[in-house]
Amino acid sequence: MIRDIDLQSIQEVRDYLEQAKEAQKILEKMTQSEIDQIVESMANAAREEAERLAAMAVEETGFGKVADKVVKNLFAANDVYNAIKDMKTVGIIRRDEQNRIWEVAQPVGIVAAIVPSTNPTSTAIFKSLIAVKARNAIIFSPHPSAAKCTAEAARIMQEAAERAGAPKGLISCITQPTLAATNELMRHKLTDVILATGGMAMVKAAYSSGKPAYGVGPGNVPVYIHESANIAKTVQLIIQSKTFDNGTICASEQALLVDQSIKEQVVSELKQQGAYFLNDEEKQKVASIIMVNGALNAKIVGKSPQVIAEMAGIEIPSDAKVLVAEETNVGKEYPFSIEKLSPILAFYTVKDMEEASAIAVALLELGGLGHTLGIHAEDEKVVEAFTIDKPVSRVIVNSGTTFGGIGATVAIQPSLTLGCGSFGNNITSDNIGPQHLINIKRVAYGIREMAEQESGVKEENPALV
Image (tube, rainbow, N blue to C red; front, top):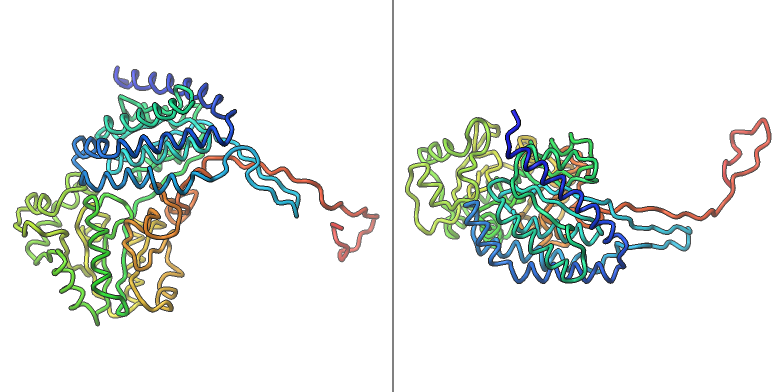
């Protein structure tokens, strides 16, 4: 039975699509300089509003920390902006004079953007920037639990774009998010491409819509700590990464695989730097609240260790930064081995790199294929041997995977949408940017001619001269 709210939300989507169509036609005719001024204005506005949007996101969703959400908003406004600001996205973007080929950028049109509740405002800023940089209109379908803050981020982006000369209706956000509205947005004839960040069900819906889609799979990031690692530095990086925004970024560490030879040192260092190791009884109590009906319990997502401990009925120190449980098995019947999106880590002891590899692959197959893998080692041969055959799209070496995966601390493209390739049933393994939201037309001059062939051509004769 269709509810009134469904009908209203569907009509809202159709209205936004009509407005976006007209706005995109205007944007498409703008010069590179005009587009760049618009994107700069948007980045400046995101920078100015970063703190307010972060506070809104935490208040509305209950996930994460305000200070860290400020950092995520600024990552989009600064790091992403700096990475794309000089990118050519209008007209002829590359000329290969030797081969006489020009590459011409044309926008895809209207982008349908699905936004998660874990990173709502930063994702909205990010997707607005890359869409408009590529001369597209964009319509957001927010998660119901993050509807207000996502809509506010979209409004800020639209107003900033307008101040720099962009048309009205370029950036919009569904105000009554329903499943019916999201489906309408993804399947409507005016939608040209889908940029989906969210749970697996939403990503599958995007790929099933009949539209080109960039879907992003889940992360269940294993991190191998090899005996050659700088232990104190490694632990510091992992704690900083895992506790950032209470673990809501999908590239955050989920399981540590630690060489037996250094286990005592790593455990000691983890405890010294704020990790709380659960005993068997505490482990069972926390395990009981990690999953609900076979899936991650949304009530623990982005919560502090103290809140999670209280939910589980255990007591932990007020200064504990992360909960750690020793684990030996992998599977849904072992909750610590799944993606937890909270400051909870599984700790596996391995006898060597081969065992670490086997556990890493098992963890990825459980729920993180194609996403991210981490390794801490000073021996480069170990890094190569461990990483070369793993089914992931990015391997972060000697850096926190939260920051490395998004391109904040390594030299891959800064992005808040991380492709998982065919491993994760995604169309790309890239960190998504404006280049994924343009069509590239190739203008190719003739540089050779087909040979004139007589009847009875000999096989060794070349087809081209």
